[in-house]
Image 1 (tube, helix red, strand yellow):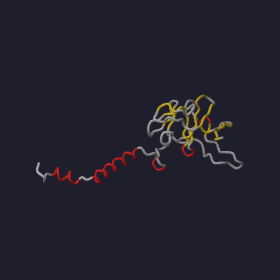
Image 2: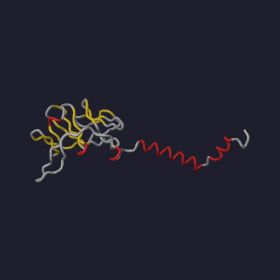
Image 3: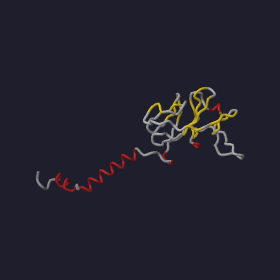
Image 4: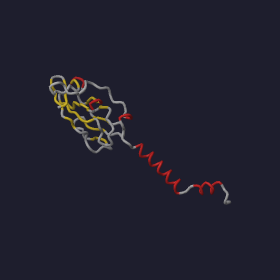
Length: 155
């Protein structure tokens, strides 16, 4: 090859700064793909049941959901309250945070006894919030609820 070949000229133009800048740009792009979701980029949540959990006069909280709206062996996502309410067995209600313990995405659905996070495929048990499929290794944080009549309320 002659000293004036296009290959040598291009190679000569690549200096340490160019290589580092390209490496940094590729690394930043890869990291952005693993970033947690912000409020503006969260996936759509399942339709909500129930009202808000704003405190009522006298300190009582408003009901989260009607017991009839929570299927046995399943649950409902209450995105505005960041709570998933489940009914593992008839008449037994549990509640968990909707924030996945892997990277902070919001869980978006409940089916077949599992609470599912769409971001990286973690599944959690409707019974105790424990991960049943990774990458999450920690359970969803449990929230205390009470059942009064036909309503489930945060305790």
